[in-house]
Image (cartoon, rainbow, N blue to C red):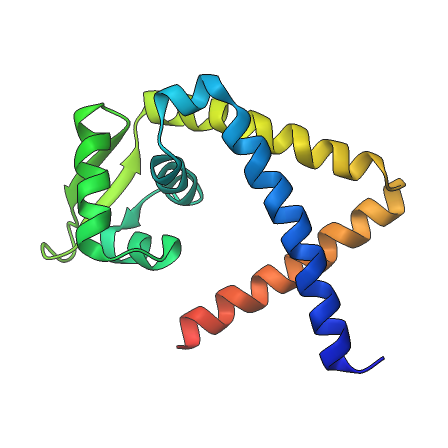
Length: 149
């Protein structure tokens, strides 16, 4: 099988998994009533770092800076995130989760975590570790390429 054929198969498998993961996420009515899908994306992205600049956040979730600004405004009003100017460069606006934002993000992650746990149950411990190692390697490459760009 050629690399092109393997790439197409991977796309199909990833789409199946991502579609199901998004469906699980959208079915969680308790979280859906508290956060829009875009707000959940912001909380997840910010939660991966202690502090995130607005421009980095926009890049991570593939939205314009003005769209992210509107989302952050709403989340600040709801006390889910706080926004401050960087002490090193006053032009840079940093965003971080509040305690309430962290708690709501954890609640929002329960469905996807449950989904992932069910996926992993179909694999033995060695296969689970292999899968995680491969995804870690792919993720690290993606992050490395982003930084180089």
